[in-house]
Image (cartoon, rainbow, N blue to C red):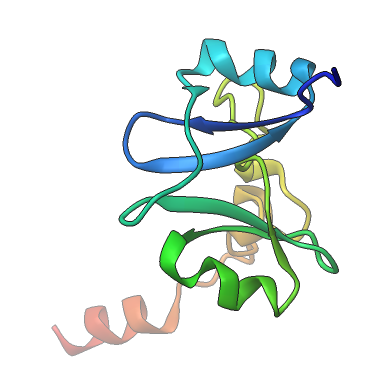
Length: 119
């Protein structure tokens, strides 16, 4: 008898995912996922594209059509811990408050001087 290596699991809200291996199954169990039957009509299935690695949910009725385009049943996107994510304010390419502040040249902005002259 061979050991089971693939497990269909559900999040309890009609979304199912295919977990490969006991370790993967056990990793998702504390996150609210539980073993389930194969997907049925009305379920949604997590799938991953074999070339670019993107993940998405598909209606089980359409899953076979997407499989022809390179999508395969998979585990869900990894959960995000909001306490361990990078600070969006420090991402590359963002302008800091110092960079956004106008240079101090002693001149007032044109819009401010034009309103004071009219009074």
